[in-house]
Length: 123
Length: 143
Image: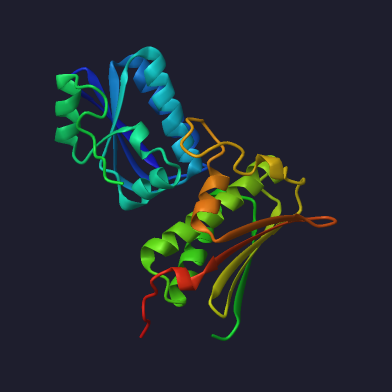
């Protein structure tokens, strides 16, 4: 797994690629929590994630909990079929604010829309 | 269908997750399972391996794990053996799906993907048997 961060206004975009699994998920968790602390919110780019397992989902949930605690936002975009399927299997897809593209995610972020108001609701 | 089995013995090293997933995906694909279903089966088996590494072996990365993939009649079977500490069956799917927790999703994924998941403590080993009935998936004709 590889990660990189970019600043986009008040948000931090966290670009993730590769496999999020038992070995790499602690790094994702660490980066996610640090970025949430240092910004008003994180936009998580999952376009290049080939695989994510339950440990990766657990890291995302921890990020969601931290965002909630800090009253910051965590926004996801570019879910691959694999990532979407794992979130569906764990019944957590609707927990997250999910967009198709980076521009949609950033637009929603900058407009400060209520969570899930524009998120995908595909079952 | 003739009975076919493939056995893989590997250390409890998280770096080898891709090897496990690749083996399961390719094995299932060989029996006509569509790609999406192959990925789900690989995920479920990998979740079981992850639990062995974390819980049975306490994150020791040099312990043996044996995976046997079998195809017989209309069923795929995946059996995992390890020499770690016994699992607590009460922790399998211990809370309802959809509840916001920061862990414990693995057994839910196994239960969702597979048609049967059975844990057994042997005298000196753990055995996890997972079964998928091929009649329940739209198979791809090979050839």
